[in-house]
Image (cartoon, rainbow, N blue to C red):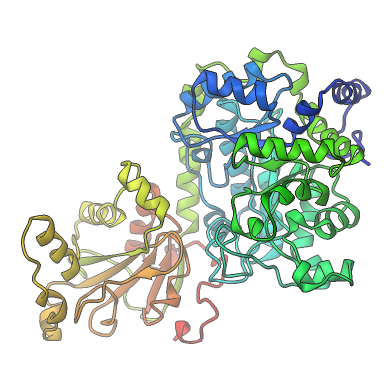
Length: 588
Protein backbone atom coordinates (compact mmCIF):
# COMPACT_ATOMS: atom_id res chain seq x y z
CA UNK A 1 0.00 0.00 0.00
CA UNK A 2 3.07 2.26 0.35
CA UNK A 3 5.58 2.55 -2.48
CA UNK A 4 8.87 3.44 -0.79
CA UNK A 5 10.67 3.69 -4.12
CA UNK A 6 8.31 6.39 -5.36
CA UNK A 7 7.67 10.08 -4.53
CA UNK A 8 8.31 11.35 -1.88
CA UNK A 9 10.57 8.62 -0.45
CA UNK A 10 12.80 7.41 -3.33
CA UNK A 11 14.40 4.79 -1.07
CA UNK A 12 17.05 2.29 -2.05
CA UNK A 13 16.69 -1.44 -1.40
CA UNK A 14 18.90 -1.07 1.69
CA UNK A 15 16.73 1.76 3.01
CA UNK A 16 13.57 -0.28 2.45
CA UNK A 17 15.15 -3.23 4.22
CA UNK A 18 15.84 -1.01 7.25
CA UNK A 19 12.20 0.11 7.33
CA UNK A 20 10.83 -3.42 7.06
CA UNK A 21 13.23 -5.02 9.53
CA UNK A 22 12.77 -2.23 12.04
CA UNK A 23 9.00 -2.70 11.98
CA UNK A 24 9.35 -6.47 12.41
CA UNK A 25 11.57 -5.99 15.45
CA UNK A 26 9.30 -3.52 17.25
CA UNK A 27 7.21 -4.32 20.31
CA UNK A 28 3.56 -3.33 20.45
CA UNK A 29 4.49 -0.37 22.67
CA UNK A 30 7.18 0.80 20.26
CA UNK A 31 4.79 0.60 17.33
CA UNK A 32 2.13 2.62 19.11
CA UNK A 33 4.68 5.18 20.29
CA UNK A 34 5.72 5.92 16.70
CA UNK A 35 2.17 7.11 15.99
CA UNK A 36 2.50 10.01 18.42
CA UNK A 37 3.88 13.53 18.08
CA UNK A 38 4.17 15.07 21.55
CA UNK A 39 4.52 18.67 22.68
CA UNK A 40 7.37 18.75 25.19
CA UNK A 41 6.75 20.56 28.47
CA UNK A 42 10.24 20.77 29.94
CA UNK A 43 13.93 20.71 29.03
CA UNK A 44 14.71 18.51 32.03
CA UNK A 45 16.76 15.51 30.91
CA UNK A 46 14.92 12.98 33.09
CA UNK A 47 11.59 14.12 31.62
CA UNK A 48 12.86 13.95 28.04
CA UNK A 49 14.37 10.51 28.65
CA UNK A 50 11.02 9.24 29.94
CA UNK A 51 9.24 10.53 26.82
CA UNK A 52 11.52 8.46 24.64
CA UNK A 53 11.99 5.34 26.76
CA UNK A 54 8.45 5.04 28.15
CA UNK A 55 6.38 6.32 25.22
CA UNK A 56 8.78 5.59 22.30
CA UNK A 57 7.66 8.77 20.53
CA UNK A 58 7.79 9.12 16.77
CA UNK A 59 8.06 12.91 16.86
CA UNK A 60 8.18 16.01 19.06
CA UNK A 61 7.17 19.66 19.00
CA UNK A 62 8.16 22.07 21.74
CA UNK A 63 7.38 25.42 23.32
CA UNK A 64 9.25 28.65 22.42
CA UNK A 65 12.73 29.12 23.89
CA UNK A 66 16.13 30.46 22.76
CA UNK A 67 17.89 28.42 20.08
CA UNK A 68 20.65 27.22 22.39
CA UNK A 69 18.13 25.72 24.82
CA UNK A 70 16.09 24.11 22.04
CA UNK A 71 19.18 22.64 20.44
CA UNK A 72 20.26 21.07 23.74
CA UNK A 73 16.74 19.70 24.28
CA UNK A 74 16.77 18.16 20.82
CA UNK A 75 20.16 16.60 21.48
CA UNK A 76 18.77 14.89 24.59
CA UNK A 77 15.66 13.69 22.75
CA UNK A 78 17.68 12.04 19.99
CA UNK A 79 20.12 10.62 22.55
CA UNK A 80 17.39 8.53 24.17
CA UNK A 81 15.43 7.68 21.01
CA UNK A 82 15.74 4.07 19.87
CA UNK A 83 14.49 5.18 16.45
CA UNK A 84 15.50 8.72 15.41
CA UNK A 85 12.52 11.01 15.81
CA UNK A 86 10.96 13.83 13.87
CA UNK A 87 11.49 17.18 15.57
CA UNK A 88 9.09 19.68 14.07
CA UNK A 89 8.72 23.47 14.12
CA UNK A 90 6.20 26.06 12.91
CA UNK A 91 8.41 27.99 10.50
CA UNK A 92 5.47 29.49 8.61
CA UNK A 93 6.91 33.02 8.66
CA UNK A 94 10.53 32.60 9.67
CA UNK A 95 13.04 31.03 11.99
CA UNK A 96 11.21 32.63 14.91
CA UNK A 97 8.80 29.73 14.52
CA UNK A 98 11.66 27.42 15.48
CA UNK A 99 13.19 29.37 18.36
CA UNK A 100 12.75 32.69 20.13
CA UNK A 101 15.89 34.21 18.64
CA UNK A 102 15.17 33.05 15.10
CA UNK A 103 14.60 35.54 12.28
CA UNK A 104 11.08 36.54 11.34
CA UNK A 105 11.17 36.70 7.50
CA UNK A 106 7.55 37.49 6.61
CA UNK A 107 4.06 36.06 7.02
CA UNK A 108 2.33 34.31 4.15
CA UNK A 109 0.07 37.27 3.33
CA UNK A 110 3.04 39.66 3.47
CA UNK A 111 5.07 37.55 1.06
CA UNK A 112 2.02 37.17 -1.18
CA UNK A 113 1.66 40.96 -1.37
CA UNK A 114 5.01 41.13 -3.18
CA UNK A 115 3.76 38.58 -5.77
CA UNK A 116 7.34 37.30 -5.99
CA UNK A 117 7.80 33.54 -5.80
CA UNK A 118 11.50 34.01 -5.04
CA UNK A 119 10.54 35.47 -1.67
CA UNK A 120 8.48 32.37 -0.84
CA UNK A 121 11.49 30.25 -1.82
CA UNK A 122 13.72 32.34 0.46
CA UNK A 123 11.18 32.00 3.27
CA UNK A 124 11.30 28.21 3.00
CA UNK A 125 15.08 28.13 2.75
CA UNK A 126 16.10 30.67 5.38
CA UNK A 127 13.47 29.79 7.97
CA UNK A 128 14.41 26.16 7.91
CA UNK A 129 18.15 26.72 7.79
CA UNK A 130 17.66 28.23 11.23
CA UNK A 131 15.39 25.36 12.26
CA UNK A 132 17.86 22.73 11.07
CA UNK A 133 20.65 24.48 13.00
CA UNK A 134 18.87 23.72 16.28
CA UNK A 135 18.16 20.12 15.33
CA UNK A 136 14.72 20.29 13.72
CA UNK A 137 14.08 18.11 10.66
CA UNK A 138 10.47 18.95 9.81
CA UNK A 139 8.43 22.11 9.29
CA UNK A 140 4.69 22.20 9.86
CA UNK A 141 4.57 24.45 6.80
CA UNK A 142 3.81 25.82 4.27
CA UNK A 143 0.32 27.08 5.08
CA UNK A 144 -1.43 26.11 1.85
CA UNK A 145 -4.90 27.40 2.67
CA UNK A 146 -6.81 29.89 0.52
CA UNK A 147 -8.54 32.89 2.07
CA UNK A 148 -12.08 33.19 0.75
CA UNK A 149 -13.76 34.59 3.87
CA UNK A 150 -12.34 37.82 5.32
CA UNK A 151 -13.82 36.89 8.71
CA UNK A 152 -11.63 33.79 8.93
CA UNK A 153 -9.06 34.81 11.54
CA UNK A 154 -7.25 31.46 11.62
CA UNK A 155 -5.34 31.82 8.34
CA UNK A 156 -6.02 35.39 7.12
CA UNK A 157 -2.41 36.41 7.73
CA UNK A 158 -0.79 32.99 7.50
CA UNK A 159 -1.91 31.87 4.04
CA UNK A 160 -0.48 33.15 0.74
CA UNK A 161 -3.66 35.12 0.05
CA UNK A 162 -6.90 34.43 -1.76
CA UNK A 163 -5.75 33.47 -5.28
CA UNK A 164 -5.43 29.67 -5.68
CA UNK A 165 -2.80 29.97 -8.39
CA UNK A 166 -0.61 32.22 -6.26
CA UNK A 167 -1.09 29.97 -3.21
CA UNK A 168 0.01 26.98 -5.30
CA UNK A 169 3.05 28.79 -6.71
CA UNK A 170 4.24 30.17 -3.43
CA UNK A 171 3.57 27.00 -1.44
CA UNK A 172 5.62 25.06 -3.98
CA UNK A 173 8.37 27.68 -3.87
CA UNK A 174 8.47 27.45 -0.06
CA UNK A 175 8.77 23.66 -0.35
CA UNK A 176 11.60 23.94 -2.87
CA UNK A 177 13.43 26.36 -0.59
CA UNK A 178 13.13 24.02 2.38
CA UNK A 179 14.30 21.09 0.27
CA UNK A 180 17.61 22.83 -0.43
CA UNK A 181 18.45 21.79 3.14
CA UNK A 182 19.53 18.16 3.29
CA UNK A 183 17.44 15.90 5.49
CA UNK A 184 14.54 18.32 5.99
CA UNK A 185 10.83 17.66 5.43
CA UNK A 186 7.69 19.78 5.09
CA UNK A 187 4.14 19.01 6.21
CA UNK A 188 1.79 21.33 4.30
CA UNK A 189 -1.38 22.36 6.11
CA UNK A 190 -4.35 22.29 6.63
CA UNK A 191 -5.82 19.60 4.34
CA UNK A 192 -8.48 19.70 2.86
CA UNK A 193 -8.25 23.48 3.14
CA UNK A 194 -9.06 26.28 5.57
CA UNK A 195 -10.19 29.80 4.66
CA UNK A 196 -13.96 29.63 4.11
CA UNK A 197 -15.54 29.32 7.54
CA UNK A 198 -15.43 32.37 9.82
CA UNK A 199 -15.01 30.06 12.80
CA UNK A 200 -11.69 28.98 14.33
CA UNK A 201 -11.20 25.20 14.52
CA UNK A 202 -9.49 25.67 17.89
CA UNK A 203 -12.84 26.82 19.27
CA UNK A 204 -15.59 25.41 17.06
CA UNK A 205 -16.38 23.43 13.93
CA UNK A 206 -14.80 24.50 10.64
CA UNK A 207 -16.32 23.74 7.25
CA UNK A 208 -15.05 23.89 3.67
CA UNK A 209 -18.25 24.36 1.64
CA UNK A 210 -16.92 23.71 -1.89
CA UNK A 211 -18.40 21.02 -4.08
CA UNK A 212 -16.28 18.49 -5.98
CA UNK A 213 -15.53 20.67 -9.01
CA UNK A 214 -14.84 23.82 -6.98
CA UNK A 215 -12.52 21.97 -4.60
CA UNK A 216 -10.66 20.15 -7.37
CA UNK A 217 -9.99 23.44 -9.19
CA UNK A 218 -8.76 25.30 -6.07
CA UNK A 219 -7.56 23.46 -2.97
CA UNK A 220 -7.14 20.26 -4.95
CA UNK A 221 -5.00 22.06 -7.51
CA UNK A 222 -2.79 23.43 -4.71
CA UNK A 223 -2.20 19.99 -3.20
CA UNK A 224 -1.63 18.34 -6.58
CA UNK A 225 1.03 20.96 -7.27
CA UNK A 226 2.73 20.28 -3.96
CA UNK A 227 2.59 16.51 -4.41
CA UNK A 228 4.21 16.86 -7.83
CA UNK A 229 6.97 18.91 -6.17
CA UNK A 230 7.77 16.12 -3.71
CA UNK A 231 5.73 17.11 -0.66
CA UNK A 232 6.92 14.94 2.22
CA UNK A 233 3.91 15.09 4.54
CA UNK A 234 0.51 16.68 5.04
CA UNK A 235 -1.11 17.98 8.20
CA UNK A 236 -4.76 17.04 8.23
CA UNK A 237 -7.05 19.84 9.38
CA UNK A 238 -10.10 19.41 11.59
CA UNK A 239 -12.17 20.70 8.68
CA UNK A 240 -15.35 19.17 7.29
CA UNK A 241 -15.74 18.84 3.51
CA UNK A 242 -19.38 17.71 3.39
CA UNK A 243 -20.19 17.96 -0.32
CA UNK A 244 -17.10 16.01 -1.33
CA UNK A 245 -17.56 13.45 1.44
CA UNK A 246 -21.14 12.82 0.30
CA UNK A 247 -20.05 12.54 -3.33
CA UNK A 248 -17.67 9.79 -2.23
CA UNK A 249 -20.16 8.17 0.14
CA UNK A 250 -23.77 9.05 -0.82
CA UNK A 251 -25.08 7.16 2.23
CA UNK A 252 -23.25 9.46 4.62
CA UNK A 253 -25.72 11.29 6.88
CA UNK A 254 -25.31 14.88 8.03
CA UNK A 255 -25.11 13.84 11.67
CA UNK A 256 -22.27 11.45 10.82
CA UNK A 257 -20.17 14.10 9.06
CA UNK A 258 -16.64 14.22 10.43
CA UNK A 259 -13.69 16.60 10.17
CA UNK A 260 -11.09 15.37 7.70
CA UNK A 261 -8.86 13.94 10.44
CA UNK A 262 -11.63 11.51 11.36
CA UNK A 263 -13.03 10.95 7.86
CA UNK A 264 -11.88 7.98 5.73
CA UNK A 265 -13.71 9.55 2.79
CA UNK A 266 -11.36 12.55 2.91
CA UNK A 267 -8.11 11.18 4.32
CA UNK A 268 -8.11 7.87 2.43
CA UNK A 269 -10.36 8.06 -0.63
CA UNK A 270 -9.72 11.69 -1.60
CA UNK A 271 -6.13 12.17 -0.43
CA UNK A 272 -4.70 8.71 -1.07
CA UNK A 273 -6.81 7.25 -3.88
CA UNK A 274 -7.81 10.32 -5.89
CA UNK A 275 -4.82 12.66 -5.34
CA UNK A 276 -2.37 9.77 -5.11
CA UNK A 277 -0.52 11.13 -2.09
CA UNK A 278 2.01 8.53 -0.97
CA UNK A 279 3.60 10.50 1.89
CA UNK A 280 2.94 10.72 5.60
CA UNK A 281 -0.06 12.38 7.27
CA UNK A 282 -0.13 13.91 10.74
CA UNK A 283 -3.22 15.32 12.44
CA UNK A 284 -3.50 18.90 13.56
CA UNK A 285 -3.45 19.37 17.35
CA UNK A 286 -5.92 17.05 19.05
CA UNK A 287 -7.10 19.56 21.68
CA UNK A 288 -8.93 21.59 19.03
CA UNK A 289 -12.70 21.63 19.46
CA UNK A 290 -13.37 20.87 15.78
CA UNK A 291 -11.93 17.42 16.50
CA UNK A 292 -12.92 16.80 20.11
CA UNK A 293 -16.61 17.66 19.71
CA UNK A 294 -17.43 14.66 17.52
CA UNK A 295 -16.94 11.71 19.91
CA UNK A 296 -15.19 10.58 23.08
CA UNK A 297 -11.41 10.84 23.12
CA UNK A 298 -11.14 7.08 23.54
CA UNK A 299 -12.98 6.65 20.23
CA UNK A 300 -11.22 9.59 18.58
CA UNK A 301 -7.62 8.41 18.85
CA UNK A 302 -7.92 5.11 16.92
CA UNK A 303 -10.54 6.65 14.61
CA UNK A 304 -7.96 9.18 13.37
CA UNK A 305 -5.50 6.40 12.49
CA UNK A 306 -8.16 4.28 10.82
CA UNK A 307 -9.36 7.30 8.83
CA UNK A 308 -5.93 7.52 7.20
CA UNK A 309 -3.78 9.70 9.49
CA UNK A 310 -0.40 8.13 10.27
CA UNK A 311 0.59 10.25 13.26
CA UNK A 312 -1.43 11.82 16.07
CA UNK A 313 -0.48 15.30 17.26
CA UNK A 314 -0.08 15.64 21.01
CA UNK A 315 -1.09 13.64 24.04
CA UNK A 316 -3.74 15.04 26.33
CA UNK A 317 -2.64 12.86 29.24
CA UNK A 318 0.36 10.74 28.11
CA UNK A 319 -0.50 7.62 30.09
CA UNK A 320 -4.18 7.73 29.18
CA UNK A 321 -3.72 8.43 25.46
CA UNK A 322 -0.89 5.92 25.08
CA UNK A 323 -2.94 3.23 26.82
CA UNK A 324 -5.97 4.05 24.65
CA UNK A 325 -4.03 3.65 21.40
CA UNK A 326 -2.23 0.52 22.63
CA UNK A 327 -5.50 -1.09 23.67
CA UNK A 328 -7.06 -0.23 20.31
CA UNK A 329 -4.14 -1.92 18.52
CA UNK A 330 -4.03 -5.00 20.72
CA UNK A 331 -7.81 -5.44 20.50
CA UNK A 332 -7.79 -5.18 16.71
CA UNK A 333 -9.62 -1.83 16.46
CA UNK A 334 -6.48 -0.66 14.64
CA UNK A 335 -5.71 -3.62 12.39
CA UNK A 336 -2.27 -5.02 11.70
CA UNK A 337 -2.36 -3.95 8.07
CA UNK A 338 -3.26 -0.35 8.96
CA UNK A 339 -0.58 -0.21 11.66
CA UNK A 340 2.07 -1.52 9.28
CA UNK A 341 1.01 0.97 6.62
CA UNK A 342 1.30 3.92 9.04
CA UNK A 343 4.66 2.73 10.37
CA UNK A 344 5.96 2.22 6.85
CA UNK A 345 5.18 5.83 5.99
CA UNK A 346 6.65 7.16 9.25
CA UNK A 347 9.87 5.15 9.04
CA UNK A 348 10.01 5.57 5.28
CA UNK A 349 10.10 9.36 5.69
CA UNK A 350 12.75 9.06 8.39
CA UNK A 351 14.82 6.96 6.00
CA UNK A 352 14.24 9.51 3.21
CA UNK A 353 15.71 12.15 5.52
CA UNK A 354 18.69 9.88 6.18
CA UNK A 355 18.08 9.83 9.95
CA UNK A 356 18.70 6.08 10.15
CA UNK A 357 22.22 6.47 8.73
CA UNK A 358 23.40 9.04 11.25
CA UNK A 359 25.02 8.43 14.61
CA UNK A 360 23.05 9.89 17.51
CA UNK A 361 25.57 12.67 18.00
CA UNK A 362 25.19 13.67 14.34
CA UNK A 363 21.40 14.13 14.42
CA UNK A 364 21.70 17.59 16.00
CA UNK A 365 24.34 20.11 14.84
CA UNK A 366 27.09 21.33 17.14
CA UNK A 367 26.44 24.51 19.21
CA UNK A 368 28.87 26.70 17.31
CA UNK A 369 26.68 26.64 14.20
CA UNK A 370 24.07 28.76 15.98
CA UNK A 371 26.14 31.95 15.84
CA UNK A 372 26.57 31.48 12.10
CA UNK A 373 22.96 30.67 11.20
CA UNK A 374 20.55 32.24 13.72
CA UNK A 375 19.86 35.84 12.80
CA UNK A 376 22.20 35.70 9.81
CA UNK A 377 22.64 39.03 8.04
CA UNK A 378 21.32 37.57 4.78
CA UNK A 379 18.10 36.61 6.57
CA UNK A 380 17.69 40.12 7.98
CA UNK A 381 18.30 41.59 4.54
CA UNK A 382 15.61 39.31 3.11
CA UNK A 383 13.15 40.55 5.72
CA UNK A 384 14.01 44.11 4.71
CA UNK A 385 13.58 43.40 0.98
CA UNK A 386 10.19 41.80 1.51
CA UNK A 387 9.13 44.76 3.66
CA UNK A 388 10.11 47.21 0.93
CA UNK A 389 8.15 45.31 -1.73
CA UNK A 390 5.02 44.30 0.20
CA UNK A 391 3.47 47.51 1.53
CA UNK A 392 0.13 47.93 -0.19
CA UNK A 393 -1.78 51.15 -0.84
CA UNK A 394 -5.20 49.50 -0.88
CA UNK A 395 -7.43 52.58 -0.98
CA UNK A 396 -6.53 56.10 -2.06
CA UNK A 397 -9.51 58.40 -2.50
CA UNK A 398 -7.92 61.70 -1.44
CA UNK A 399 -5.19 61.92 -4.05
CA UNK A 400 -3.63 65.04 -2.60
CA UNK A 401 -2.78 63.53 0.81
CA UNK A 402 0.52 61.98 -0.26
CA UNK A 403 3.40 62.56 -0.08
CA UNK A 404 3.90 63.38 3.60
CA UNK A 405 6.53 66.00 4.36
CA UNK A 406 7.20 67.96 7.56
CA UNK A 407 6.38 71.13 5.64
CA UNK A 408 2.89 69.88 4.78
CA UNK A 409 2.06 67.90 7.92
CA UNK A 410 4.28 68.96 10.79
CA UNK A 411 2.01 67.71 13.59
CA UNK A 412 0.91 64.05 13.19
CA UNK A 413 -1.36 62.30 15.69
CA UNK A 414 -1.08 58.51 15.85
CA UNK A 415 -4.17 56.70 17.11
CA UNK A 416 -3.26 53.23 18.32
CA UNK A 417 -6.18 50.87 17.70
CA UNK A 418 -5.83 47.43 19.23
CA UNK A 419 -7.76 44.18 19.00
CA UNK A 420 -9.51 42.29 21.75
CA UNK A 421 -6.93 40.63 23.99
CA UNK A 422 -6.86 36.84 23.82
CA UNK A 423 -6.03 34.58 26.73
CA UNK A 424 -2.62 33.80 25.23
CA UNK A 425 -1.73 37.45 24.61
CA UNK A 426 -2.75 38.31 28.17
CA UNK A 427 -0.55 35.48 29.47
CA UNK A 428 2.40 36.64 27.38
CA UNK A 429 1.97 40.17 28.71
CA UNK A 430 1.99 38.88 32.30
CA UNK A 431 5.18 36.96 31.55
CA UNK A 432 6.81 40.00 29.96
CA UNK A 433 6.91 38.31 26.56
CA UNK A 434 4.72 40.71 24.62
CA UNK A 435 5.98 42.64 21.62
CA UNK A 436 6.82 46.31 21.60
CA UNK A 437 4.44 49.20 21.06
CA UNK A 438 4.08 49.83 17.29
CA UNK A 439 2.58 53.28 17.84
CA UNK A 440 5.66 54.41 19.74
CA UNK A 441 7.90 52.85 17.10
CA UNK A 442 6.11 54.68 14.28
CA UNK A 443 6.17 57.92 16.27
CA UNK A 444 9.95 57.69 16.67
CA UNK A 445 10.51 56.97 12.99
CA UNK A 446 8.39 59.96 11.99
CA UNK A 447 10.15 62.22 14.47
CA UNK A 448 13.49 61.07 13.08
CA UNK A 449 12.33 62.41 9.71
CA UNK A 450 11.47 65.84 11.12
CA UNK A 451 7.77 65.39 11.92
CA UNK A 452 6.31 66.33 15.30
CA UNK A 453 4.45 63.07 15.92
CA UNK A 454 2.59 62.12 19.09
CA UNK A 455 0.42 59.21 20.24
CA UNK A 456 -3.21 60.02 21.04
CA UNK A 457 -4.30 59.45 24.63
CA UNK A 458 -7.95 58.55 24.82
CA UNK A 459 -10.24 59.55 27.70
CA UNK A 460 -10.32 55.89 28.73
CA UNK A 461 -6.51 55.81 28.87
CA UNK A 462 -6.53 58.93 31.05
CA UNK A 463 -9.13 57.39 33.37
CA UNK A 464 -7.01 54.24 33.61
CA UNK A 465 -4.01 56.33 34.66
CA UNK A 466 -6.14 57.98 37.36
CA UNK A 467 -7.16 54.58 38.73
CA UNK A 468 -3.57 53.29 38.67
CA UNK A 469 -2.51 56.42 40.59
CA UNK A 470 -5.10 55.71 43.26
CA UNK A 471 -7.31 58.58 42.19
CA UNK A 472 -11.04 58.58 41.58
CA UNK A 473 -11.55 58.42 37.79
CA UNK A 474 -13.25 61.41 36.19
CA UNK A 475 -16.16 59.73 34.40
CA UNK A 476 -16.94 62.99 32.61
CA UNK A 477 -13.84 62.41 30.52
CA UNK A 478 -15.77 59.64 28.81
CA UNK A 479 -19.30 60.98 28.76
CA UNK A 480 -18.69 64.66 28.14
CA UNK A 481 -15.70 64.75 25.84
CA UNK A 482 -17.34 66.54 22.93
CA UNK A 483 -16.01 69.88 21.85
CA UNK A 484 -15.90 72.09 18.79
CA UNK A 485 -14.44 70.51 15.68
CA UNK A 486 -12.00 73.38 15.40
CA UNK A 487 -10.73 72.63 18.89
CA UNK A 488 -10.39 68.91 18.10
CA UNK A 489 -8.28 69.38 14.97
CA UNK A 490 -6.27 72.42 15.97
CA UNK A 491 -3.36 70.42 17.40
CA UNK A 492 -2.84 68.15 14.39
CA UNK A 493 -2.19 68.40 10.67
CA UNK A 494 -2.80 64.73 9.89
CA UNK A 495 -3.92 61.56 11.70
CA UNK A 496 -2.53 58.06 11.28
CA UNK A 497 -4.98 55.44 12.56
CA UNK A 498 -2.68 52.50 13.32
CA UNK A 499 -4.70 49.28 13.46
CA UNK A 500 -2.65 46.85 15.55
CA UNK A 501 -4.95 43.82 15.37
CA UNK A 502 -3.50 40.33 15.05
CA UNK A 503 -6.77 38.38 15.14
CA UNK A 504 -10.44 39.27 15.02
CA UNK A 505 -11.84 42.78 14.98
CA UNK A 506 -10.54 46.11 16.27
CA UNK A 507 -11.70 47.22 19.69
CA UNK A 508 -12.59 50.92 19.90
CA UNK A 509 -12.94 52.72 23.22
CA UNK A 510 -15.12 55.27 21.42
CA UNK A 511 -15.62 57.90 24.06
CA UNK A 512 -18.02 60.77 23.34
CA UNK A 513 -16.28 62.89 20.76
CA UNK A 514 -12.98 61.10 21.26
CA UNK A 515 -10.49 60.28 18.55
CA UNK A 516 -10.38 56.48 18.88
CA UNK A 517 -12.35 55.84 15.72
CA UNK A 518 -11.81 58.10 12.67
CA UNK A 519 -15.21 59.79 12.43
CA UNK A 520 -13.37 62.95 11.32
CA UNK A 521 -12.09 61.85 7.90
CA UNK A 522 -13.51 65.01 6.24
CA UNK A 523 -12.24 67.30 9.00
CA UNK A 524 -8.53 66.41 8.91
CA UNK A 525 -6.45 64.18 6.60
CA UNK A 526 -6.50 60.59 7.86
CA UNK A 527 -4.35 57.65 6.79
CA UNK A 528 -5.30 54.25 8.21
CA UNK A 529 -2.58 51.62 8.43
CA UNK A 530 -3.22 47.94 9.10
CA UNK A 531 -0.05 46.58 10.72
CA UNK A 532 -1.51 43.17 11.55
CA UNK A 533 -4.61 41.55 10.13
CA UNK A 534 -5.23 43.19 6.72
CA UNK A 535 -9.04 43.42 6.92
CA UNK A 536 -9.52 46.64 8.89
CA UNK A 537 -11.58 48.35 6.19
CA UNK A 538 -14.54 46.28 7.32
CA UNK A 539 -14.66 48.28 10.54
CA UNK A 540 -13.41 51.66 9.32
CA UNK A 541 -14.85 51.80 5.76
CA UNK A 542 -15.03 55.59 5.95
CA UNK A 543 -11.27 56.11 5.76
CA UNK A 544 -10.14 57.61 2.47
CA UNK A 545 -6.59 56.27 2.50
CA UNK A 546 -5.82 52.75 3.70
CA UNK A 547 -2.48 50.92 3.73
CA UNK A 548 -1.52 47.38 4.74
CA UNK A 549 1.97 46.71 6.09
CA UNK A 550 1.13 43.18 7.42
CA UNK A 551 3.36 43.57 10.49
CA UNK A 552 5.04 46.22 12.63
CA UNK A 553 8.66 45.11 12.39
CA UNK A 554 11.35 47.77 12.41
CA UNK A 555 12.24 47.24 8.75
CA UNK A 556 8.56 47.34 7.80
CA UNK A 557 7.97 50.72 9.41
CA UNK A 558 11.16 52.04 7.83
CA UNK A 559 9.69 51.14 4.45
CA UNK A 560 6.28 52.56 5.39
CA UNK A 561 7.68 55.97 6.32
CA UNK A 562 9.81 56.08 3.17
CA UNK A 563 6.78 55.27 1.02
CA UNK A 564 4.61 57.86 2.76
CA UNK A 565 7.22 60.52 2.11
CA UNK A 566 7.82 59.52 -1.53
CA UNK A 567 4.15 59.31 -2.46
CA UNK A 568 1.72 57.04 -4.28
CA UNK A 569 4.17 55.57 -6.78
CA UNK A 570 6.45 54.21 -4.02
CA UNK A 571 3.99 51.53 -2.92
CA UNK A 572 4.92 48.25 -4.62
CA UNK A 573 2.58 45.76 -2.93
CA UNK A 574 -0.49 44.27 -4.57
CA UNK A 575 -3.49 43.29 -2.49
CA UNK A 576 -3.22 39.48 -1.95
CA UNK A 577 -6.75 39.25 -0.56
CA UNK A 578 -9.89 41.34 -0.91
CA UNK A 579 -8.99 43.95 1.70
CA UNK A 580 -12.34 45.62 1.02
CA UNK A 581 -13.88 42.47 2.53
CA UNK A 582 -16.55 42.29 -0.18
CA UNK A 583 -18.23 45.38 1.26
CA UNK A 584 -19.65 47.98 -1.08
CA UNK A 585 -19.24 50.87 1.33
CA UNK A 586 -15.57 50.11 2.01
CA UNK A 587 -14.80 51.20 -1.57
CA UNK A 588 -16.60 54.54 -1.35
